[in-house]
Length: 108
Image (tube, one colour):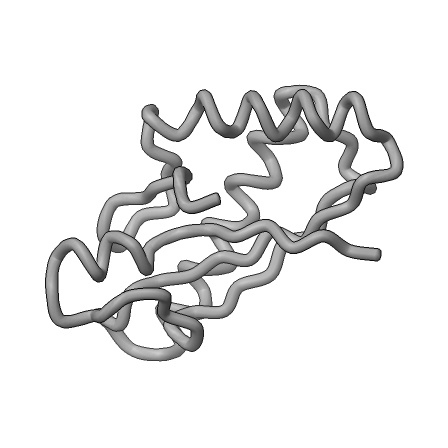
């Protein structure tokens, strides 16, 4: 999903992201064997080290929120990727917003 959003330089989940987080938490609660990595990402603004730390904070913020909504901690891992995996251009405000995201990858 790319529906979980963050402001520039922040790891606070934007309120409009809550509906998708509730859906994901519900899925995890109903599927106890499901496991996901939460990958945090940033745009290219700032230095590499700061972006890596921010991406880790974003992934952990989502993990914490999902646990508070009923997911089990054992179902989730969090990892930061910084600016290394953009999905859009970092030359426009819209592209940068798309790159400030978390992604879920199923863990087998």
